[in-house]
Length: 540
Image (tube, rainbow, N blue to C red; front, side, top):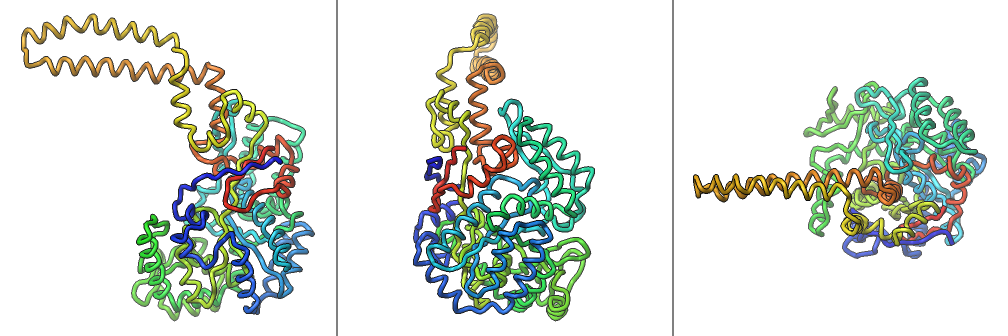
C-alpha cells in the first residue's frame, strides 16, 4: 500500500466542520457529502429534471475537446453524456501556467476517481468534467510556477510575462511566443536533466505552440495529461457555453435584488453559527461581470440601473443584451455555480476548502432558480512523498504527520538541543568584556547623579540584548548555511511544508514528472485514495 491517510485540520473552520459532518456546518448544504443515501437522493432528483439543451451541450463539448486535442477516451465520455441517463461530477480551477499548483492535478484525479466510483455504486453513467475558469482576470495568481532550487532547500518562483493590460481575462490574453520560450528556458534550466526531460519539453512546447492564449495552453496540457482517463474539459468563455447560459443571465438580472437579499441572509446565518465570513456580500452587488471591449468589469446595481467603470444600463437594456449578446456576460463566484447546474446534470461538485465555504451561501439562491444545490464534495488533498525525503525524516525520527502538524515547535526544540556554535563562545566573551568595561562607567554616573541608576542599568541591558540578537541571527544563519543537519532539515521543510503551507498549494506537477515520468500521473489516477476528507500521503 503506497497511500497513507492523515486527519489534518483545515484552516477554514466551516469547511473543516463540514468535512467532519458537523450539523452546524451541514445545515448550509443540501446533502451530506459522504453518505451514499445523499447520492441516491440526488440521482432521483436529477431523473425528474429534463435538460432540453443536452444535445447542444454535447455538440459544443465535442467540438471544443476535439480542437484542444483531447483523447478518444474523453470524446467517448462526451458521447455518453448525450444520453439522458448520464450524469456528471464537476469541478474546476483557474488556468494556471504549466497546470499551476499540484492541487489542480489532485482535483482532476478526484473527479476521475469519483466518476468511476459513483458509476459503479449507483449503476449509472457518471462522467468527470473539469471546468476551466478561463475568464478570471487575477492574472497574478496564474502566471507563475514554483519549484525547488539550491539542492531542493528553497522554493524558486518563475513568472511568465503575460503583458497584462486592464481587466483582461486569461482566455483573451495572447500567449506571447518569445515570452513563453524564455519562461520555458528558465523552467528547464531549473530542472535536473533526466531521461524524461525531452518528452516533457516536447509536451509543453507543442501545446504552447498550438495555443492562442493562456487558458487554451492549460486546456491542451490537461487534455494530454488526463484525456486517456476520460476527463472532459470545458472553458467558461466558449461561445456555445455563453449561448446556453443566456436564460440564467436573464433570470439573474430579473431577480437581482432577491439574490442579493438571500446572500445577505445567508451571511447572517453563517455569522450567527459562529463561522468567519468567506464572502463579502453587499446589497448593491449584481453578481455578474460584463465585457466592455476586452475588459471584464464587475456590475453593480444602483436602484434599477446597472453600472460598471465604463457604462450604465437600465434593467431592460441589460435584459436585451443578455438575449442578443450573451457572450458579453460572465458569472462571478456566486453565479458560476448556477451556470454549472443549469448546463450539466451535476451529481456532485468537487471544491477546495475555500469553495466549500463559498457554497455555504448558495443553497437558497439555487432554490430561487428552481434548482437544488448539488452534493458539495471536498476536494481530495494529497502530499507526494519521495523515498529520499522519507530517509531524511527517519534520520530525525520524524513522521510526515509531525512535519505537517507541529514542525515549527519541533524545530525550535531541536535547535535548542544542538551543540553550541564556536562563535557563541566569542559572543560570550564579548558580553563579558562589555560588562567589565561598562560597569565602572555606570558606577561613576550614579556617583554624580544617583537618579540615573535605572536609566544606566536599562542602557546596559539594551546593549547586551543587541549583542544577543546579533548572536542568535548570525549563528542560526551560519548553521543553516554550513551544517549538514540544518541543510537536510531545510530540504524536508521546502518539500513538505513550503512557505509554511501544504506542498500541493505551492509546488507544481511537472518537476515530479521530470523525475518519475508522466506515468506517475497514471499511477496517481489508479491509486487507492480514500474519499473521506482525510489528507492522503502518496509514496512515489
